[in-house]
Image 1 (cartoon, rainbow over the protein chains, first blue to last red):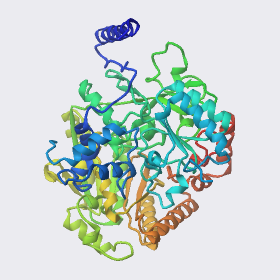
Image 2 (image 1 turned 90 degrees about the horizontal axis):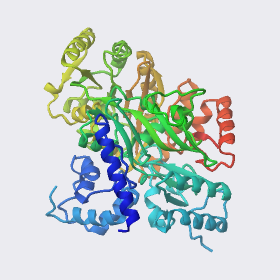
Image 3 (image 1 turned 135 degrees about the vertical axis):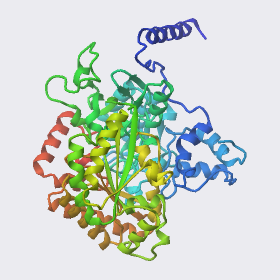
Amino acid sequence: MNMAKWGKNLFILISTAIFVNGHAWSAPPDTSPQGFAWKDSAEIYAKICAYCHEAQVAPPIRNRSLPPEYIRAVVRNGNRAMPAFRASVIDDESLAKLADFVSKSETGY
Amino acid sequence: MASKYIALPKGVSETVFDTAISRFREILGDTAVLTNAEQLAPYIKTMMPVPDADHAPSAALLATTVEQIQKIVAICNQYKVPIWTISTGKNFGYGSAAPVERGQVVLDLKRMNRILEVDKDLAYALVEPGVTYQQLYDYIDEHQLGLWLSVPAPSAIAGPVGNTLDRGVGYTPYGEHFLFACGMEVVLANGEVLRTGMGSMPNSNTWQVFKWGYGPYLDGIFTQSNYGIVTKFGFWLMPAPPAYKPFVIQYEHEEDIVEIVETIRPLRISGVIPNAIVIAHALYEAPVKARRSDYVSGPGAIPDEAVRKISKDHKLGIWNVYAALYGTQEQIDVNWQIVTQAFKQSGKAKILTEQEMGDDPAFNYRAKLMRGDMTLTEFSLYNWRGGGGSMWFAPVSQARGSETLKQMALTKQILAKYGLDYSGEFIVGMRDMHHIVDVLYDKTDPAQTQAAYQCFDELLTVFSAQGYGTYRVNTAFMDKVAETYGPVQRKIHKTLKDALDPNGILAPGKSGIR
């Protein structure tokens, strides 16, 4: 990391700390230049898939050894009432991991 | 020679479009400009009864900053390329993520998804377009802010910006979402950035607390419109009440809607019942518990006798009134007495609370929606007919019993003519009711798809002839609905469009405005 970047990061850290201390009544604003990003496949599954596939709205998909490539295709294209999910919602890398997560029978959820 | 694009914008040659695309790539980078069929597939699927190809985009742009959007509109103006802006792109039954016209470039703002501020004391949020309700819900929970959201039924995967800009609704006391919007940042077609209301003033700290600013109020013209691209959006949140009491009141006959609305209206206008109540028909609730094929087979609308059997088998009313009380326990106790006294008068109502309903799946998801929790259980509706076809027919009614009965009967009659079921509910208002009907059909069945299109067209024609306007519609019928509101309003909309977007680059066709 060069010094200029380091300095900028330190400035953001200090700014955030001042804000939190000075305005305890308010949640700190998100000062990060990047927005939301998925933590892992379990989070995507819980916060998108499970609302239907674990709630008797749509068929179960875990523990069925569904091929990852099939899962990826259905997520991107949708299937009948199942909506299509864009790369801006679930990026390609996260989708590849999610497909493995759903496909494997031993994943905990 | 075959085009390298799956569609082209109207009136734009492939050579010109090549140039525009290369300019977009300079701004966004190659990976944020999508043009091949595989990348664009998720933008094409809709639930409407028209070929998906009619709404296929030519490209999608994944922008993340205001500056990028300013540069994009400059290029669009230069090459006359139209863009269709989406946020979370989950406007199911209204057009999903697809553009209103084939060949438009989708400006996808899902990755512009920062929660910029949530103020606990003043109970407001300022967010970017790609923020989902789930993201905000988790943020509020993580920071223990003690605030509640108001969400539409697709809650977790949809977001406040897109929903409110399309004048969508939720189910809490803040359910009429645009009433609780406060301050927008808008990129105009000429690249200027407008902050509405108090946001126009440098150093103001009242952007999210006072709606009106000074002079004509502008926020309304950026809803259901194509006059600008909203890049920041403020709205109010509800402080979590100390106590919450959801309940359902069931009635056994369709005609009882008259008594229901006459009983509820004074309670709603006076604030005894504060939330956006729902009066749901049995067929709106049945898919959570029952399968259509267990009760009826073959073509045609489901007979009333079968609906009564479903209601009996699954402990549903023919009408199911979902409402809730919020506040301290003392406040709730007093209001509960007023509510039960009002509904007990005729002896027709069955009043049920969490105590009686237990883990009933229909009651549970309604109870979640009325407190702004995440659930997608309402998507069970799509299993009723299967095949992924859905359009929301959404006429506005007076909150008057005789009017709601008339609208229900008329809707049911037209749906039955085309072999479709009445899956309807009345929601939200104090003085109005949004009459929301899911026109469900099997999109894999060409005959049913054609019937659904003709049915929807007739619903709009018949209702508008009787003076009933629809408040929101899918992208296949926007011109038709715009026409029903008459030539003077259309002309004003066009005058504004010509003034704010003379090259017509922003979503031409949205709400019938070009």
